Length: 96
Image (cartoon, rainbow, N blue to C red; front, side, top):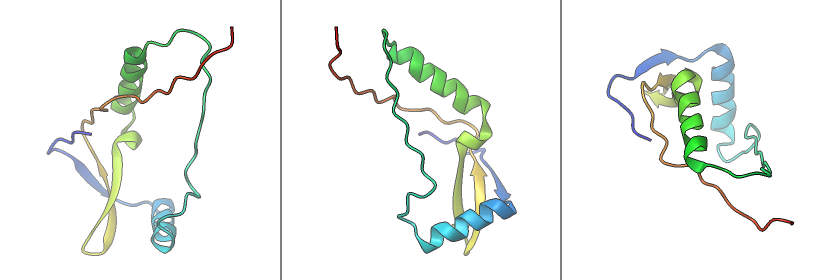
């Protein structure tokens, strides 16, 4: 991920602060992670898939936001431009 120097920082909302606090208590917890597996039963153009993810990231600031602390206070940093480095796709054998 490439981050430009013109990023913006904002205070956390009450909900974000609560989640940040819970994360501080159990940083290795996967409680708020969601995994998804999809089966695509057709030809897949990986470049088109990557371009689609890039368009989503460019359009939605929440997908370009990271959380950090400065002098013990949490804040969110919205990055202006992120470039995804590639989409990882695993291929399994298919039934014919």
